[in-house]
Image 1 (cartoon, rainbow, N blue to C red):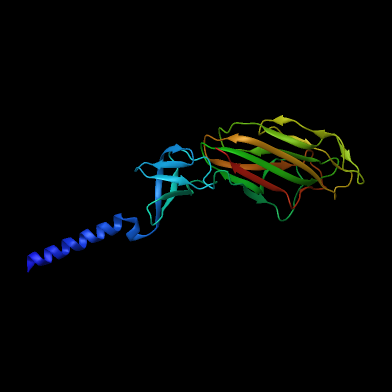
Image 2 (image 1 turned 45 degrees about the horizontal axis):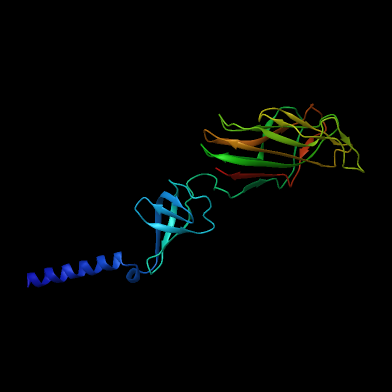
Length: 241
């Protein structure tokens, strides 16, 4: 009797193993894997599985932690990376202002809305699209907070600091400089502080350590009439490397 029970147990275990190892028996499934090598349109994992890449899995690289999925016929596809960092690769992430903020001093400080954590050892394209208003005396001044050791330069496009645009014409002299992240940039204004102007700042930024990227801003000259960063201003961060 014992011999018969042992044989039945052995057959049962063999059947389970066959089902576990045969895609046509167990059906489709998915799991995590690490990329070892990359070919055109496919990757091979560290445990030897070759999988075709979906178009959404952009720029695969060795070391990527990915999701792979197997069909019932045994074929594998690589779906995409698993999120292991603060910001996804090649996918823009937005921060924006729903309510305007007024300031009446010339001390640069981070905006509470236009701020984001960046990963260490990464490359980002960062944009600040700014709707701002100020008096001709107070004006509007910016700089960036970036993680320690970050490298790159930022461009600053908007009304020139000497420009006072009229209420009837939004055109005028502009600024086109490229600056260090902590270099203050001053922008011009309209001749009515209730009217907004637009400025754009952007950079390709490389990090060595994780940390905050934020827009700093203040008045150029302290004035009792506030300078405003208005609702609709936004930050767009795209990790590109």
